[in-house]
Amino acid sequence: MSGRVIVGLSGGVDSAVAALLLKERGHEVHGLHMTNWQEDEAGYCTAAEDHQAALAVARELGIPLHRVSFAQEYRDRVFRHFLDEYAAGRTPNPDVLCNREVKFGACLAYAQRLGGSWFATGHYARIAHDAERPRLLRARDVAKDQTYFLQQVSAAALARTLFPLGDLEKPAVRAIARRAGLPVHDRPDSTGICFIGERPFREFLERYLPARPGDIETEDGTVVGRHDGLMYYTLGQRQGLGLGGRAGAPEQPWYVADKDVARNALVVVQGHDHPRLRTARFATDPATWIAPAPDGPFETLVQVRHRQAPVRCRVTPRAAGLEVELEAPLRAVAPGQYAAFYAGPECLGGAVITAVETRYNSKVLFSPAAEVS
View 1: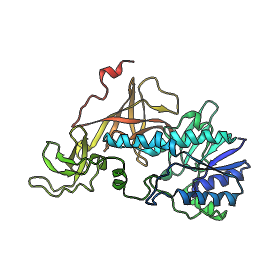
View 2 (view 1 turned 135 degrees about the vertical axis):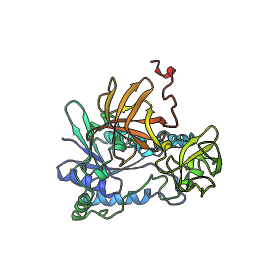
View 3 (view 1 turned 120 degrees about the horizontal axis):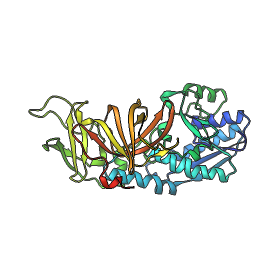
View 4 (view 1 turned 120 degrees about the vertical axis):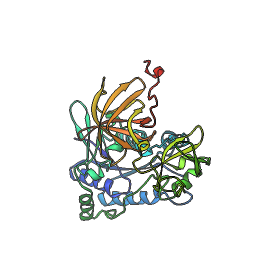
């Protein structure tokens, strides 16, 4: 692989080592630091110190560092969707969308304008650049694997991408950085989303979405408490409900089982493994396929959360999306989450979950009208 490589330098140890490894392999390496968020009056986002860390790495490696802001693209393509999903009672994952729209969308295009033949990042994943198409594969370090977050990236983008850390484990990455004298070798990993940072999630949402308190109900409609706003709760959640023991009810903790957006009601059940928390079938919107799109039903593996063990499933393509039947029920599957599909270590692609079915909920996943192509 020849040509200039543009490395997305975030200011963390992973991207720094990715740049180091590519330079040691003889590539012409340039760094590119992007910022996606501008509003931070409370000081939670670390964008300024991230840029300084990226500058320090670039100086140590002797490579040029470019800087670009994609704050408008992030707001239009990721953040607006994030707010809309929460307002609708769903559970979005902005990191997946950010990878598709910003990192491997706007940023990759900018890297090409800088003369880059390749774009590289510090993601823990592997790409097999086969003659016919790129294959996105899990990282060797299963605990750090990030293919779930890359499921929506197009095959065309992956064909121009390198993941130098795919065969390394995290301790080895830090050891390489330490031996090379990189100034970020012991910098803590970033957690969460930049625009939220370490601030309380509820405090952040309150700035953009009006809270609508309402009733907390059992599955038979009995009111047992009040919630602060459906957007603050996720399916399967136990903490923060403010529900204690109730006369005539078992002494088991309460969990969020459903959000009735139309009535602004939060439905709760008792018991970690209550049947209403178990999903055996769900529907998605049209999938983004990295591998060739299937033209009929097929069996594969599916994962609906990062670091969750994948389960076997049968997938049936529909005109409006996919119908997924699980071999073993999964707990607290929520509309808005992403489902990533795998064949062994290969990530085939993924889709947004639109509706779920449980033992207590036999809703029609696809209406007859949706089947008209």
